[in-house]
Length: 407
Image (cartoon, rainbow, N blue to C red; front, top):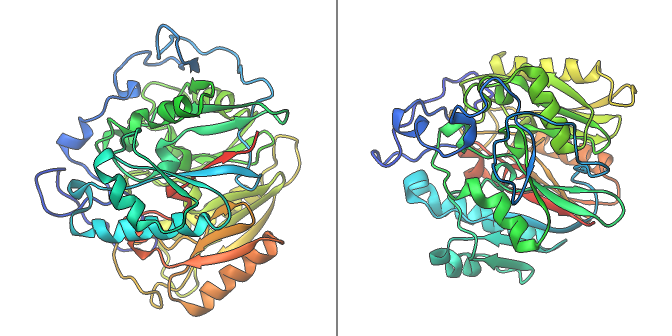
């Protein structure tokens, strides 16, 4: 996602060019947009909201939505106590080309860092298990070779866990379809259910197609998202906003959706909310806002619109939401210059005892971001990492991590 007014560069069709694919660069290629197995693009149930379905049901695409059946189960904030963090090991040269080693180094760095605070389970294709084990030096990282993956964006493809506060936990799959069929995803489409099977927890397929990075929850009934990434014909063709809201709330155990407009067609995610806006707690949020030194562009306007919307919204309980601003770095002072580089401090990850965030080389902005996060998360260590290789591929630390909350 380019937040600095530079035109995103087009990328060639997977498998036909040595140029590596970028997760956030929009891929308008026939071979990729036609790819994918997700039911959202199959035409089944067009115009009708799909109900959440539990494993073992006769069909994964029931014809009508039913009342939210999650009961007391709800997706909590990342900041609750975790059992572990789930990640995935990238090994595709077709996707990353010569940039693969840099991606792997950043994934290993993040995994080893989180593993200082809680266990990490790292999915890897069987042929890459040894490489992943050698790269991750912390013994608290466990590499799992029985669940194949296409890519490393575990926030989007992995299961979204729900808890009930009384020892119960299950997993929801958001029917990942490669961000609307823009990238191969045959394995990643199955990751959520396979992780649930691995853990032996109940699994539910949500009644919509989305990605974990597209939906933020306060854990108490309120979710927020961009319309551009969910009310979108390549995820949920034929579904109305009301139907999507119903399915989203059923999946997350929520009752209210706060919508941002977002930006369509400029990055592969269509502007995921977790690069800009996050919930801190019920009644509390954070929005990354533009750096005054950067030019006004569609991304800075998007940040301003998200701040304005969230700071004037109420949550599911009707309470006002207090919003903290987190200023972006100065693009002229950061290390990277790629048109697709994502300089998101807001894409941090909260684990047991720590907040893992990015730093970009703008010493003043990096220090400010660290100070803000320390203030917002008292009692936790704030660790800033150079994850520029992931940023150059359009993502951040939150994008490659999926928490498993303690029941």
